Amino acid sequence: MIKTECDDKLKIGIIGLGRMGLMHAAVFNSLPISKLVAVADTASFPSHQLGIINPNVTIYKDSNEMLDKEMLDGVLIASPVFNHISSSLSCLEKDIPFLVEKPLSLNCVQALPLIELLKRKKTTNMVGYVYRFQNSFSKAKEILDSNCLGAIRSVKANIYISQIFQKGKGWRYDHELSGGGVLISLGSHVIDLLTWYLGNVHKVSAYTKSLFIDGIEDFAHVILEHNNGVHSILDTSWSLRFKRKIDVKIQLSGENGELIVTDDEINLFLENPNNQYLAGKTVFNAVDLYKPVLMDIGTPKFTFQNMHFLESILNKSQANPNIMQGFHVQQIIDASYKSSKEDNTSIKIQIQ
Image: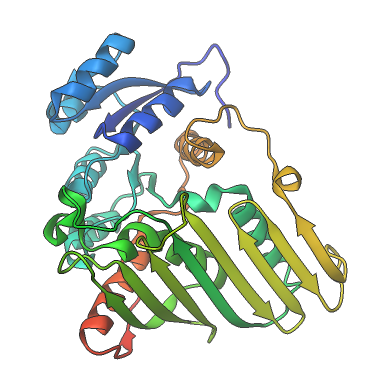
């Protein structure tokens, strides 16, 4: 359901005005069915500048004050990770739909009060694992759901970027405030994709390595055993050279062929056709995968994600990925860290 021009736009508030918060602010304020009405950030500079650009936005230093005073239809939470759960709880207690940036929390223990409250609340909620909305990865899901590959035999995935080559500064490089390093920050995106493609995970083993800061891993290698018996392997680092942009690749091998998906291309090879895809090699490039988008701020996937959130609010339905799906990703991350500390021991995961 889409609101018409005569309807009031959905009123959106944002908690946290860092890079992601500002990007989301621009998207929500440009979409035809929403408008940014309030923001909350303890820092004065970004809020002040936003107020100059858009004087119709009310500025708060306290997010709870914003939630109390504003009649909000939805909230985007883009504060540092250590504040995600407290802000999410505040929204949920007031029955305000919310989209919280990834990762969900520092760890599973921190997230448990939110999980418990969700058992009693049906408020629309979402976690910002935005790669589900990238054209190539959403098309790959469609291909997999057609069962053209047959039974999946092996899965390899990687996500890399050239980012950390010395000791970093700020909350992202403090384990107590970030929850970890490249695995929770970057690798979590691919963990979400793997659970979306292959289902939940019940066992994990992992190896991590820290080069610059204790407790902040720069390399991680994780083996996931899914409930359907498929094993997937994830390799991630933010300390590799020649990776100017985030580099994602997932390779799935099945009994009838192979699927390789990257940020902007899909290669599909099938031994035998099915009713949707031909035998032999098929390539989907960026042009083939293109979908019309209302705007391109921070790449189209953010617009698609935010539209999905808004439409879920209008339909009073659950968004995807929701908090419970984000919590399962957190379980996998926690188990990976535990496995690495225990000499790569396999760690079992109990699904909530």
